[in-house]
Image (tube, rainbow, N blue to C red):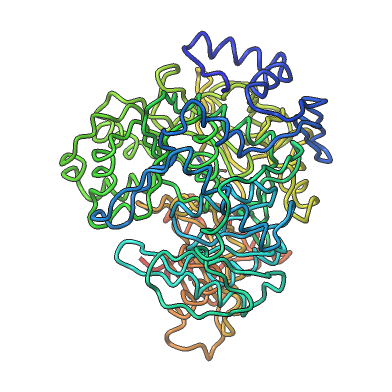
Amino acid sequence: MTHQLKDLQDYKETYARSIKDPEGFWADEAATFKWHKKWDNVLSWDFVKPDVKWFEGGKLNITENCLDRHIAERGNHTAFLWEPNDPASPSVHISYRELLEKVCQCANALKELGIKKGDRVVFYMPMVPELAIGILACARIGAVHSVVFAGFSAQALADRVDDAQAKMIICSDGNNRGNKLIPVKQIVDDALEISCQSIEHVLVHKNTRTDVNWNNQIDIWWHSAVDKQSVTCKPEIMDAEDLLFILYTSGSTGKPKGVVHTCGGYMVYACSTFRNVFQYQDGDIYWCTADIGWITGHSYIIYGPLLSGATSLMFEGVPTYPDAGRFWQICEKHKVNQFYTAPTAIRALMAQGNEWPDKYDLSSIKLLGSVGEPINEEAWHWYDEHIGKKNSPLIDTWWQTETGGIMITPLPGITDTKPTFASYPLPGIQPVLMNADGTEEKNNNAEGLLCIKFPWPGILRTTYGDHERCKLTYFSAFKNMYFTGDGARRDSDGRIRVIGRVDDVINVSGHRMGTAEVENAIDEHPEVIESAVVGYPHDIKGQGIYAYVIVSHNASNDIINEIRKVVTKEIGPIAKPDKIQIVSELPKTRSGKIMRRILRKIASNELDTIGDVSTLVNPDVVDEIIKGAPI
Ligand code: WT7
């Protein structure tokens, strides 16, 4: 297994080496895995094209490193510990040996259904073990998985299926989420009505007793296809740079793009970061509360923990069911040692009062993690005091779908922590702050645009089917730099604090959302003429969605509800605007550009700093919008 950093000196020396001799450093990390053939070349890179290759010529299968490799030593150890939505139902322990067998059975079923190396398989499933099993089964046979968060709408699912030209969707019949029953298969049926011409089969896992419509030509039950299969399946031998998965994420323009990760580099990076950041020790129970529909679930529920031979807890439900103590009840029940969640969950639970965590024994917790958005000071301290009891290091981990794994974070017990600071780069990571004029900001106590100036094994390779977009989005803002889209500040000791997006991307409850994407959805309503969407500070969600909309004169009285509905239909409930204001005009420059800066100020109620509006073609509209702002 990859090296696990021991102490501050180890971190300092390892970091220094990783900068001086990145190839030597990463080759040593990579050498700890099982390869069928060693790589010819550790790294080749060009950030202009961009073209980055790690461990080129190396041959491997990631599932052998996640599963087969552990059988001799820890075949009976729990790989996944599954906690169901209903606290009265039993938890399920799946050992490494059982998991390998289940993955092989599913892999054999996929092959029988015609899935081959390189084919894309889309997942639209709740947090059940079969989701992880299916993902690993794809990796076993070299199929490319693309998980779509099951909160997205049929339209959003169809868009992603079409973009990836996927051959199969794997879903469940339904999903028990809190006290709701979600008709998952019905949403897949709706997506197939919309488009999804490339789909040959829908593999349906029976998870609830939901009634489903059945199309004999396409639909197949998981149990009838999988259960009869052999429990062994030879892994497909992959090139290090073959695709492992696609994961769609929102950007500042257009439709979501498919971030591409490849087998070798992603494997090395997911494992190395997991072991260092969570300081996982044999026997620990590690819990990441993310959904597998996001990158956090890919890297830190499935791949990182399994590559490290860890026990990874997977939770089907929601933090508030049956009550606001559920997370803490699960921590007590399973004696969780490392707990990793998002600021939005912390804020929501903090608002429910201290009596919830106080009811449970949280003494097993050694480490608290935060991810997904900037964590505010108040939430940081509550988490530290009421969950960590002030003796578990709290690590604020900064990274992105595109980075594959954690990039900047304190190391528990090794480096210090400071509220709201992601702090220090991991070995191999070279962050820089850039000024808008293209020069590097070298001073401490300064702000800039966060870029990374050297490749790491987990960096995205392209955006699926559109390399130009990858180049434009990440590699064009500054020459020879990967641009993150985030603004950051460096304190006097060199710690980094990530402030938030500087582009038209907002972060709603840790979910990344393009404002243009929400505008496009709103504009689908026939009575909408134009819209502008901005983020504003929201106590629980971090950012809320504020939509300014111009509607036609004959729009119905219920237009605001109708707009919410159309967004839910086009994207999903997570994109529903929190506030909608009907306006007669939007503030525009002479060249016709919407001045979002002004709209952001109004939405945030920062009226004193609106600044000069005289360059607008319609300065009067600003006052009108301020007067009509919904409370
Ligand atoms: C964006 C990436 C990484 C997995 C979850 C989100 C924001 C993420 C932090 C943090 C401040 C953070 C950034 C980033 N972000 N973690 N610890 N502090 N901001 O992945 O959906 O790809 O979103 O989330 O703005 O660019 P994602």
